[in-house]
Length: 293
Image 1 (cartoon, rainbow, N blue to C red):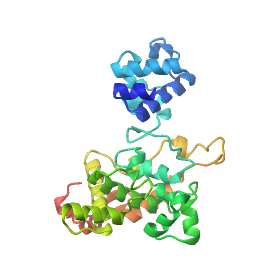
Image 2: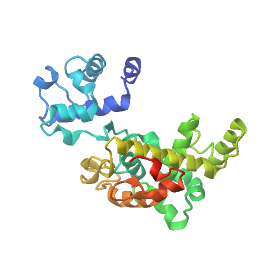
Image 3: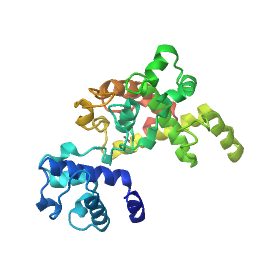
């Protein structure tokens, strides 16, 4: 099915999340055969999934609704199906379970692109990158222990802010994230050295990360112009209110508000609007009088 999606030019994360929504809604009785064109859309039915992939690619029947993505599809159907549409800012949530890896929970909520795991990719919280976390986030001892405990919400905002800035630079330079933010085989210092050698201009880790921060803030301003604000930095209630039912992290929910409060503070954004303050814009060389919110 992954190969089929690739051949048809369909994103596997978005389509997988949209089909999962349809399956859950069908099993809950919120979707019927009248909606699906006679198909029984039950969890794990590979034959039906393959058929839905083809229908979506060709916008045939129920596939034309799925092709809109999970947010719009749920709005088209209505009848309470919106509750089961797992997305942030219209983008379907990827495989990382927010209730077990809290740094990805925050990263999905704050991402200017919606629930994109590659926007922040805060793998610096994982125990195997403990040395890098200590170096770049300035944490040690008990604080570092809290950071590398992926189920704890503490210090995840610091990791997300740093990772978002680094990712923005990596994206701007067209460098692979596996070698940079995923593994730190290419550190911010090495990236600065490479850019300096290539472009012939002075560059440091600090100057590149400031460029990344400027990019994140400009994207936030673009989103604000299009009507997004603090209310959109959120997650589906399944992750914030429904405890994880089983597994090693059973009972866990996402402490999103606590993480957002720290995130906005570190970013220098107004916690009531989720937008950069004038002081932050000025510090980044974005004079407020020249930036339309």
